[in-house]
Image (tube, rainbow, N blue to C red; front, side, top):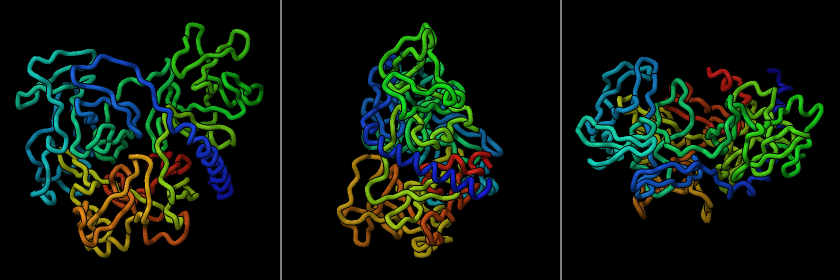
Length: 454
């Protein structure tokens, strides 16, 4: 791609981002509707900021499944009808996804939890009966465990309050990513021919092929003004004569006898020039936007965004790119290693070759200034012991107050000298997907490497 085209795309993306940001406040209170399904006694649905509605236990703790996942040279996770998460502590790596051979001793074994300590099984009483898609499986230890759609269910020891989704990740697994636990959700309230998927900015509405759905500022409520040339690239999402409007979904007559879907009274379209599923190219044209059933909270005041040749990133007050550290260990239970309650050995080796001071200088925490506040739960301020990388004790001397996303600290990179530099994006194993640093992307869909999956 030539530089002039990249610059044009970046400019369009900035306009799209600014326009989306201006409408974000209006969308902030909107939450995703879901289909009510039968629930076993004690279970309920909780609304979350990042993943929409999720199933939860009696305490409101999110329920997760562990999808069976192919790694490079093996597989992990739960097949349907089985739980492979046990109370036996893993002590060595498997070599399934790592460049290292199997059999290496895992770090800090004295502090390492078992799989069931990190992800307690959602146990069922001995007399529990199936309800709808809820079934009961028998664990290897003989205890009964709830499953949904055949997959064993767990909670996470990282989730403390109803609506927390700190223990899992709903983004689609990509070849080199760890096998993350995924929140289990009730069916979204969508007409046939629509889908919804989670990305960094929210719950994005998609069509049946999982291509993006768009809305136009030029339209009126339940009225399309996209005709002629416009309708050649912006294809109206037509509703069959048998369709019925309900909830956030309405149907209007686009032309005599031709019905079109609208979501929250905004007519819906696909875009013929979208090159990939779940893309955003159709929002590059001013006045056009991707549609969300629910928007994720934006970063707190003081954060900014910067344009790069590969997309738009979140940056700190000085314009330096913000990075997140990703980590899942290469063990049979694939526990996380990116949260302050988990081992910091991998992160310290990646950012400072095991030297704490070098690590702090290379990837400094994004500190929260005095008086800083957050109005959501996705972003928080946490106290960190900089010598260990773990949460500090209350009142601990030398602790630093830092910003965290999903309860995990965020960083900048000393090698970024100018606003918009992204020199540490993908630093680590398998481009930072398995273990390493990734820029906090608001949008990276016109990054050629991202598109190709390389």
